[in-house]
Amino acid sequence: MLICMQSTSVRIDRSTHEELKRLADDLGTTVGNAVALAVRALRQARMGAELADPLREDETAWLHADLG
Image (cartoon, rainbow, N blue to C red):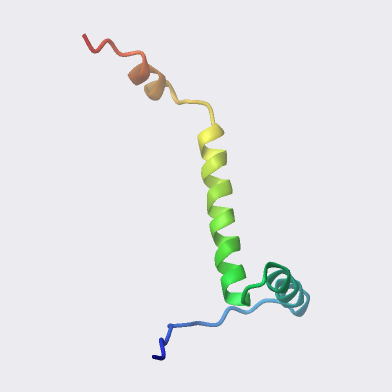
């Protein structure tokens, strides 16, 4: 059974492509999967940075609200 995946092209410079191929080889995966892993890691890093930001005044007030 052949599964066809949709794909698109992304232009990157030659040195980045070579590095991406080496990384994929080191991980034992495809270049496409290495890109997917990198995107996920970047998304997680951004989420972590947002979670590390100090709470806004309204968020702090909500946390200290009297619920009783």
